Image (cartoon, rainbow, N blue to C red):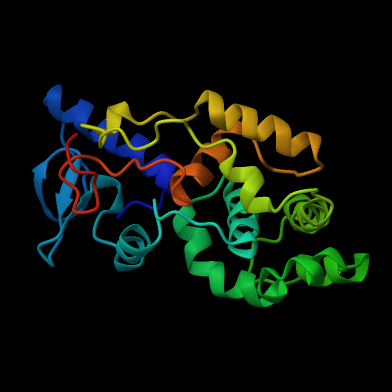
Length: 227
């Protein structure tokens, strides 16, 4: 599949649908599409079309994306990895996730909050991760901000969940937004609390990944049943 993030892949799939309607050649990934927004893989499973044929992406889609997550450490990790993804592909982050976990002590919040400038310098030299000083420093700042919260991180994040997040599955990729008012509000609040690399689009990607919203499209095996 093309090397794109979940959000970027949705945009790519939208372009594929548009091109098909306009009679342009399609660069869609291999598979047997039952409809433009759903792709049936070689295993016979219908998934959101942005997943393509990449097995790691398929596992992420099947086991993680859209699954409600309430663990503080795991949410902290997702916030940081979504930040690292900014300007890059989500697949790039997935492939490096084991290295990120090793470099940041399993994203243990207390341990990362105690990182020093020497740790930053070592991480900048670590070719197994994304060597972006600002994002590395943001990961440390986010750990410290998490420890400073008066409520658990999970409670804070989920307080911004839409009031009706599971009404029905999106009929098409075109129905899936890039950002929402809730994501914008979450971004603003996290920034006020000292978090970094938490823009509105990044926070909507977090909401999708952590199950605050369910954007599996109709026809995907993980999609919500029609209301």
